[in-house]
Length: 136
Picture 1: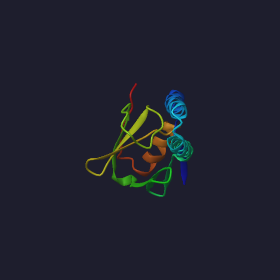
Picture 2: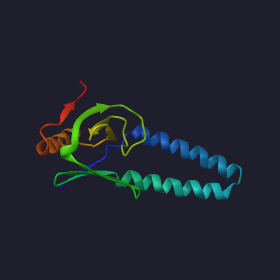
Picture 3: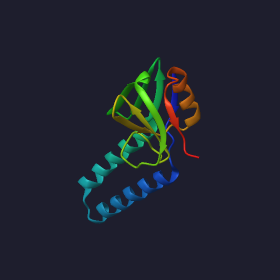
Picture 4: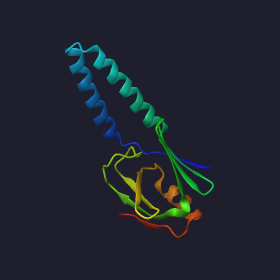
């Protein structure tokens, strides 16, 4: 089994921290302690998600795990294409330099492995038919 951690963009972390800080300041100013505690719980979940987002290759399957709720399994033989994208759609990717995985007929998923080349090589070893499109 090979594991690949997700790349995390520093500016993405700064943006999220800034957003939550402003919300917490406003809630504290309004003395909305229920909202304040709720946002602290949300922040804890976001931190946990950042630390647990991992992509692993287990046999002939690609397992994508992000926090408690997102646990996805894709048959590598079903992957048709992998291409680089900067799409900002919500996904288990913590950076905006992402890989789009096209599998089955019309299904797509965005991921952001830290070591993109090693990840692509590992998947290509299992399914050499995958079309890989990298930007220059």
